Image (cartoon, rainbow, N blue to C red; front, side, top):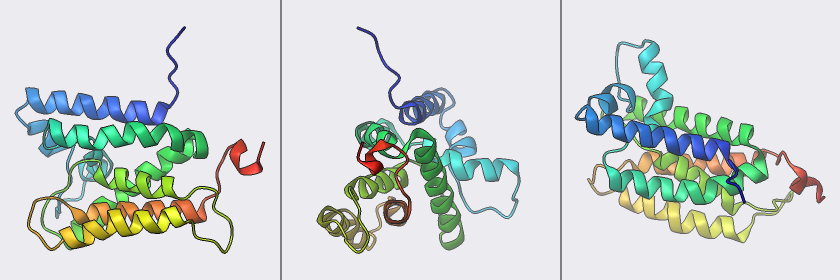
Length: 189
């Protein structure tokens, strides 16, 4: 028996975020603030652009990290198998960039964590066997339960970016309805 590196994007993302957590602990949060979070800035430079993607690696603590990566580790391998590792990587990077860009445009607070990616994966996983002119019932239920809760929670002041969660869900919806799967599942083999 041997161990398989079955979901390279999921596992690499998880390991990278774990390293970011260890760095945060050893630098008293300096690395998280400067490398693994994004915030509005008038000084747009290479580091600012990098943080538009790396903010998904930074987390406010172990509970935040575990909440996100427990779901990513469950959903990621299934999505990599269905859509391909390269496609999932593109979806993760696109979701990361869109959530950071829009958060920076509309809010003055910073953004860190992979919650937007988690919501993208939750919604994307609910769109299975999509056929033209049909909407899967699982998708409707997920949108009502997960994204509906985020809309309601957006009214509270809890330091959680429901906006990133909602945007992640919108990205997952877009990817699910407009992107064809990349593997043999689509052709029925």
